[in-house]
Image (cartoon, rainbow, N blue to C red; front, top):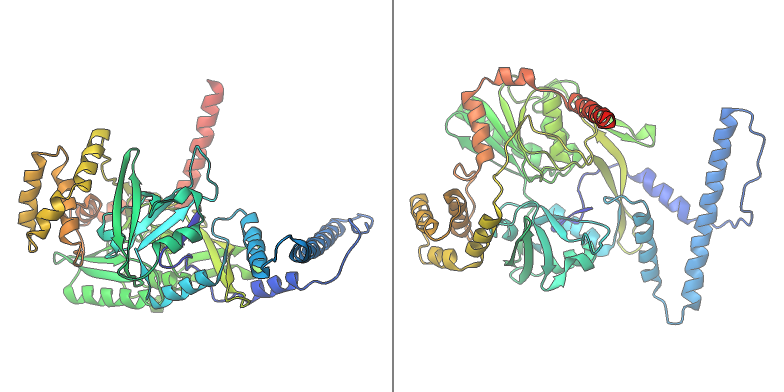
Amino acid sequence: MNFLKIFSNYSRFSRSSTIFVFAAFLLIFSSTTIYASAQPELIEETTDSNKTELSQAEKALKTRQYTEMMRSVFSFVEQNYVDEVDSAALYEGAMKGIMDALGDPYTVYLDSSQMRNMNDTTVGNFGGVGLLISKPNVSTPEKPAYVEVVSPMEDTPGWKAGIQAGDLILSIDGTNTADISMDEVLSLLRGEVGKSVKVHMKRGKNMEYDVTLVRAVIEVPTVKYGMIGNDIGYLRIIEFTPKTPERVQDALNSFAASGYKSLLIDLRNNPGGLIDSVVAVADKFIDSGPIVSTKSRLKSENTVFTAKKANTTAPRGMPIVVLINKGSASASEILAGALKDDHLAYLVGENTYGKGSVQQVIRLNLHNDGIKLTTARYYTPSDSNIDKVGIPPDREVLFPELSEEEEKTYLKVYQSDEIKKYVEARPNMSQTDVAEYAKTLKKTYNIEERVLRKLINNEVYRTKTQPLYDLDYDIQLVAAINILRKESFTSLMRKTKTISELQEEAKKKVVTEEKTTKKN
């Protein structure tokens, strides 16, 4: 799936060293030698070394042949097609084809508009709806390639509308998302600030609904923090940007001044970000050893990011619980994995997204375009790659799924203007007022009061900043707090296992199940 962001259009998880990729790219496209021979002249294979050299020679010759063929086809089409040809259109089509041929959802061609989107992300000044989305590469009648919401960004139109991770966007202003490219999806969702866009959503198996989102200035979020009571420091890392390490340190300083006894790091719906940023954050908690390593096809590009004791600012031994969910991806998985493998934190929530690859963005400068190329995979301190697997929590806490009947009721409440009109008529509703109104709604709608209170609060906070946390609706957060306050953290950590150990157990389980199946 294309793991792209409405406000970014690429996963900002890159390293600064991109010259070698760019140089190789230019080398491929600058070849002018024509080879008529279909096969290289063979020499006697007497040693493994000769075999290797032969293989490399064959590969080099094929590369030159394919490159020249592409050049020839480009020229022939440009000169002989029945209508006048736009060479830029041919170029972009060829570039997209090269990237798509790799079959990697994270390796893509970026046109000038998409490259501008990256700049927008850096400065955080553009109109959008604030959703991180993905889209399958292939659409079939059995499984249409609808857009999936990976996570909503806090305090954005998508967040305030109650859109959740896992929701599907079936259409945008009447355009079926299964029939269009990710680029077209982005162009429909982004636009002038203050202008609205109508999306048709699907949640679960049967719940479908329309929601109108008014585009707003989307700013790149970093960190939010505050105390829960007088003992727990609550640190929500929304995304890993260049400013995140600094903001995390601000939070830790604030907690220390408040006399915190334990720490709760919330990585839910964190789509990732910069590897240097997450390494700097992890280094505040880990005083030695690897934080993350990247492994490339080129051994010279393999890198191990190691913690330094001088950078550690969080108290060693302080109880830490990390909240994760299916919207936790990429760099947020690096932090969760590093803290888990180093036995520093207890993970609560649900399995993470599972993005364990590293991309570099290379600017091509022909049309202010570029490519985003997967150049490596990252590994946790226990030498585990979590790509397409994710990281499981030490304690799973899931939000209850609505029954089919409850889904229908939820949809009925959501689509009615009843709550909206009630809240608009009472602009200063307190949480006591919200609870009372939920009891009233419960008489008409057979759905859990906690869910009704959440729907009401979505309206209450539609035009104002959401509270830092929600102890009423957020059962995962409540579970994490209870662990820190009521359970023996030391005993819990003795039972935790590294990601590598968990993956080995999973493999053995599969083997055992396969043997059992064969016997039966």
